[in-house]
Length: 105
Image (tube, rainbow, N blue to C red; front, side):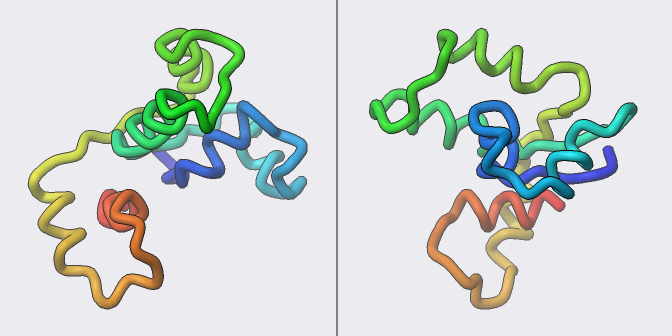
């Protein structure tokens, strides 16, 4: 794994690629690029879809298969990640998903 993706960047890369800055889009499309994605990102996307806030062009499971492809490794949410998240200094926002993503890094 070379890069850890934030949920928003991963989602936008597949749902709205034109909304990403060109430099980020080039990085995401680079041949041989390997990316990590916290398991919490799957839950965040699934929950938004379940609540009707995120329409997807495919059923959720199929969309995950498409969006994960061969270059994204889902990183587990372990007790070590949660412990690390709890030791982060004052986090700039109140999104626990973001804390877990940072702790995954």
